[in-house]
Amino acid sequence: MLATLIRSASLAAPGHLSTLHQAAAAADDERPDGAWHAEWAALTELGRMTVGAADRARELFAYLIVNEKAMAANLSSAGDLLLSERLMLTMGQRLPGGRSQLQALIQAEAAYAGELRAGLIEALGDSQAVDEALDPSGYLGRADEFIDAAADAHRRRSGENPYEPVPDPQPAHAGGRGPSPS
Image 1 (cartoon, rainbow, N blue to C red):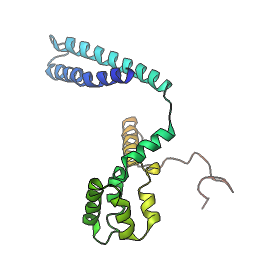
Image 2 (cartoon, rainbow, N blue to C red; image 1 turned 30 degrees about the vertical axis):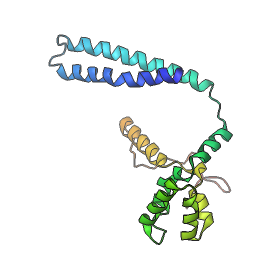
Image 3 (cartoon, helix red, strand yellow; image 1 turned 45 degrees about the vertical axis):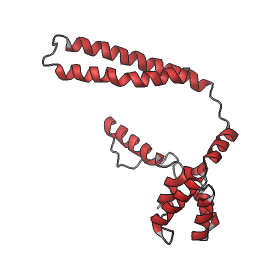
């Protein structure tokens, strides 16, 4: 039920945000008739929904139990197609037939389960590389790119230079972590 209430807030919020933007755009004076009144109602409702959704998320996550065996079973039941994006990025250039050969293998997997792994191993002759590419445990897709973009946006908003290297939290010293002195 908590997840449903969080989702309902996320579905209602864009309408209130639209009202807020429309009212702000209609403002032709500091206190125009009607526009700022509509802004306050929409802003109040957005705040209420945000706080409510955050509180429901807090409650929901307080009871979250991570069942690694169930997660592994779900990933396993999805089959090798789960990582077709990763395969296209990492294996497409390595196959003799390139990306078109890989696309054919992926289509065969979709039609006849079990063909993808065998076809990749046959084409590459490297079962270890295929097993690593089809292991979902270490694959996060483009998550690192998204995190970096969000961090850069935050730095720009806060006035930090996003291209300035972040200092190493561990000072360099003999036998310790961090870069070696040069």
